Length: 175
Image (tube, rainbow, N blue to C red; front, side, top):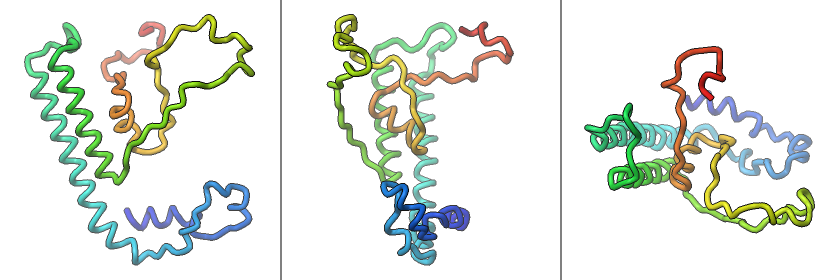
């Protein structure tokens, strides 16, 4: 796996100054100092334990959620907003924060709530709008494999899987 990743990073290590001049914000200034022999200890002693800890964490989370939802009939109704659902949300939050920590990342949020769209929407565009507390739909551009973990920690969304849908070419049947 490491050799494949090393091969895929060759375009960052080639030092093409003409190409990098067009995209200075994406340029890696440390890439010329990369050496294959320096990455092998990290690949052996960091990658393997991280993968093992993440796999153990995923199975632990699945087991805890399975135990917490014992006796609930999901065909009849979803889990009501009471103690069990709140505890499940905290368990997800804890495991997602732990997964982000194992990945070597941190979380910080910078909110800018006051944008002026009057140039695009007109001077009185706010008159007909109500105050929105929470977004109804979140679209993620998948910057990393940890997007789901970060979304669960920050906004606790409800994901919509398509496993339960019947196979059909008529999509109007579902909507």
